[in-house]
Amino acid sequence: MARMARRPLAELRKELLGVHGIGPETADDILLYACGHPVFVVDAYTRRILARHGLVRPNIGYEELRAVFETRFPADVPMFKEYHGLIVHTAKEFCRRTPQCAQCPLRARLKRGQPLSV
Ligand code: SF4
Image (cartoon, rainbow, N blue to C red; front, top):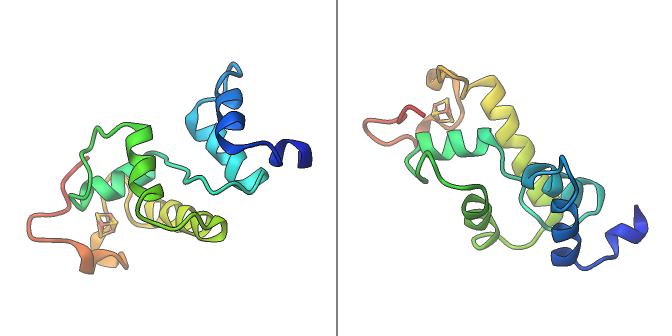
């Protein structure tokens, strides 16, 4: 694992994506959590929360959504881990299939007419 973590990020990501059964989210999970590379892990929760707030299109692709984070935030591994964890927590606790906006800490970020259903 340590040898793998020392490999250049782009090269390692390409190699992981070439492994049968490893998609972008799993590859980025490995890169961020196991190898400590500054990669933002995107999942359905990320897309759902951002789309419900009108920040991205509901059908935005994985790489485009990953770029939204990676081009706007510093390449900070602990921050990416925490950010992803907070998104997962928020989605599981509040932003479910039927959003529980009244109890959600992000409700102040909603604009008129939101959440947009996704
Ligand atoms: S305020 Fe509503 S739409 Fe926004 S994250 Fe919370 S539950 Fe989801």
